[in-house]
Image 1 (tube, rainbow, N blue to C red):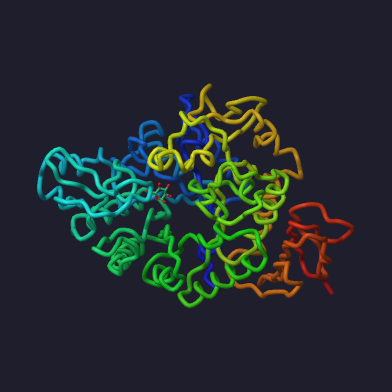
Image 2 (cartoon, protein in one colour):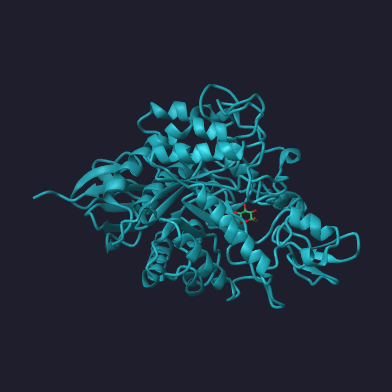
Length: 506
Ligand code: GLC
């Protein structure tokens, strides 16, 4: 078993705009993040993944990148990013950044040159005389017409023109961008929309040519010491997914099957098994993800009658039982942390934040909302600024007026309020991540048969994880309870509860 850091890491996702605001303008920034590094150290994470931090008009929360070699002024400066990387490293925390190779921003130099009519610059994008019938992933046509009559392709918003990966200049550019950040100490990159780069008449998902790009990127990352490539690869076919993880391609990829899995014992077991059988042959460690900046917060999703992932989990208007959702989220967290591989924690998950579903429509910023004609509420509800301390908004986030408003009810969920409460979600994550570091992480599992509605397994260290998804309390196997997601019931494990046990000593 390889001991490289990333194989069993706990990776914390920072959505910078909403993490902490250091200069009081209502938007999170590097100053805020730097001031909260001790919080992340104390939580016990091995690495931070930051969503895009580059100069951007923010048409899609920074996934519209205007300059891949600089920092958005609202977030800070390049010098400050370098300071942040050094400070994280001093705390033994790795830094992973987001690279967006599928598309750029209409404000990028390359796209401005293309708009000015330079034919060579147009070759870097998809300009055509006639559009086809492709729809954008955010809704509406995937083509927008420019002043001289040509059309350009954008799989996402019109402000996000797609690069033409048939053009060698695009390859060169991104290899340079990778080196630019690896030279500045970045430990890895999360590759946005990693399967979409190539387009043909038949479509734009998972074309074989994309693998040559990642083989080349792997060569670049291998020029450095332990820099990793993580793919955002949403594919229904596991065999196709695994191709991205061959030994000369990406190191890991997000496990969206697990993220999308309903709270159902048979489905969970099926997805875990499928994940393990997909990853083992290519030698890549699985990842376990419960949420991110694109999906409904688990506390809300797991509280619904339908916990499946229909509509990206965005089922606004469908009632959610907050206590049930909270209990299940705690159980799911301990389950995810116990599985072999690396685990992701999206900011606020460790505070048990719910989705904010009642944002006034005129405050919604996600292009998904407007582009769907208001039928899809979009992703703002999982991107609300974090509550740190105090009794009322902005709850120590910084400034007076955060870019999205926080609910008053979050006074009970601040990091400060949870720190001193031993039973809080924050302390569950802290203790779980601490135990995980010594007893879990990379490796294998052995299933334990404790009934059809109980998901249970033993890990290499001997630690046993038991999650009860039935409606009655069940007996636990022999051992000492090291941690449980809720109180036990006379020695029995209650419904929607997960426990970790160390084996009996002889
Ligand atoms: C990815 C990101 C998402 C973004 C999209 C377009 O799916 O996670 O937030 O909107 O790519 O870049």
